[in-house]
Length: 113
Image (cartoon, rainbow, N blue to C red):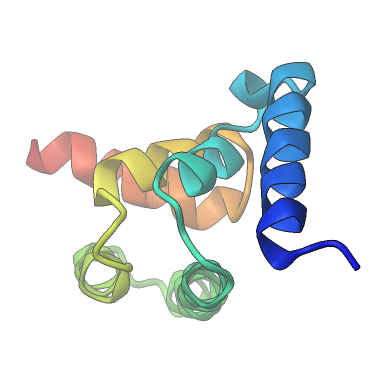
């Protein structure tokens, strides 16, 4: 039976090879996840935060609200510590994940900084 260590080494090799043949430049958020060594739980947290805030954003937009800084604050506060908020917003926006929310958060970041 193959040892666990050998299996892990083989999986690491396969992952390295896959990363070389995959165009991660067109998938900046996935590239960020890999480069920051996020685990499955942390990735699920990011998706959960984005889902929740995207719903809030759409509801607030329908209500005519124009101040979305609290959404940015909530995003930054809940993001896993491994991720830089600006970098994450940019990567999600470029990959067109949660487009409405990320476009708004990106514009807020540009206004603040």
